[in-house]
Image 1 (cartoon, rainbow, N blue to C red):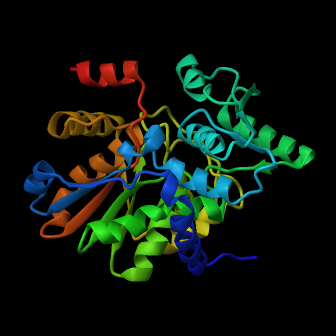
Image 2 (image 1 turned 180 degrees about the horizontal axis):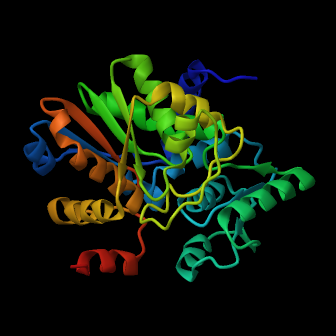
Length: 321
């Protein structure tokens, strides 16, 4: 069954009712500094202040709450999606397993280790681990929860748009970082149903613009990603992912930024707003700064998608000359 934009809208409406008691309605903050340097109004949607430190909780909760509690779930993640699944399972007192590459950093393992969720190691990279976890889920008759390739996940992420409409009187432009495309699909699908004239800008690190290159070529491609500070958006896209067609239809523009630009954006938000953001959120800020002259006199929303950056990584960014 082919999914349409109308399916996103319906799932967002359902998700908003389902997850509202369990999430934080994150604030929107006017950035006086970014507004001044760009001669426009820049609003920051602070998903870096969401429970678990990332927007991923919205989709994970919506998916987990829509499933029978007695049926265990399986996912593969070393980061924000995994943290969100652990939190969601703790809320419903459900059970599940998270598959991790064998070389997963201890700091990430520690973050995933609270609660009753089982951690299982397999493979040397995330794509290998995810493929294996899917096979196990199918073999054992368990639910595999994708970080993005799921209409309930997309619906959950789209609840950000429900909040934005209440928080910002008029939105002309929205910028959001893109990996697998679940976040931008949910937000853009709902926002454009309210105002088709909103410009949706997808932001990528130059080192891993998989969705961008896929849309350029008209199909989901495999490509080698270089290391990036935006680890939350890095990596491949699952073959046949429903997000591909949504992104093709909903995204109006693409911006790519360098690692240096991402690092400067992270430092800027720390200095001007006294907030920590992760690399994927830095991509959005960097993309705005790179093109700020084109936003003059507009109301612009930047999604700060998360705050989960390692201490050593943050220290290296701050101390870099």
